[in-house]
Amino acid sequence: MAPRPRQHSQVKKIQPRSIALTIAGSDSGGGAGIQADLKTFAALGVHGTSVIACLTAQNPRHVLGVEPCSPKMLRQQIEAVFEELPPAAVKTGMLFSVENIAAVVNFFGNPQSAIRNPQLVVDPVMVSTSGARLLQPAAEKILKEKLLPLAVLVTPNLDEAEILTGQKISSIEAMRAAAREIHSHYGCAALVKGGHLKSSREAVDVFFDGETELLLSAPFVKGVSTHGTGCTYSAAICAALALGHSLPHAVEIGKNFITAAIANSYRIGNHFALGQVSRDTLKNSGGAGGRTGSRSSCSALGCSCCS
Image (cartoon, rainbow, N blue to C red; front, side, top):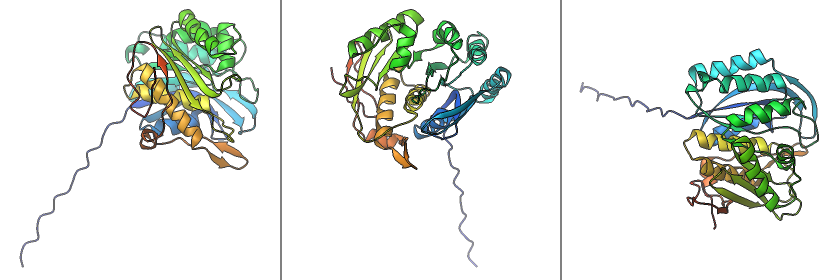
């Protein structure tokens, strides 16, 4: 018999993935918090790690209860991630208590912990859309004085930006002033989100980092009531930072991602859930842009920027 041809096995080359970390609350409804963050990380091709800061009993209509994690367990979760899976970027969401914010500050503010120097995005979750308090009143002080100075970016909505600045915000010019005030006062870049601005015909957000100002706009999607947009937006920015994008570029990617996620929302029961889209889908979607400032590179994921 003729010898059989020798078969060569093919070895698949396994590509490494960038790592991002979310420190936030768990949403039992699956639309916001840790759940939304991990879906966003996965959609953008980033490996997501997580630290649960608190449990919530909630659904798309309301929050029934909140129970914070112990500071000791929160710290151990962070240490476990950093021991073997050091993230390139980190975002915080709902931290809720003074003790938990202090645990985060003590870890990231410690020079020994900061050797790996991940970029920190703070989503200052304070009040839910339904009006439930998601940050203890006493925790506002430590968030402002200790956590924000450690961040590269804070992403407040209008209500949160008013708390951070002490000023009423009712126009795009007021949003621009608020972004500059936040940067000046806390030392981090600011993305003031104007999705609930009553006088605007589009969803306009303002970014300012001391050098570059971005005015990012996208049409409102009619007939869709969304939940978890703030979590998803900040998670997309965090993922983009983990992938090595500059901060202004990461914010553009985040804006495009959340715009596409809202447009691709789907129904769950009597509610809607955001459709976290893949990078390929995002590349083919319309951009959300507009900027003033010194930089002019467009987002690699479809941002159409205009001067």
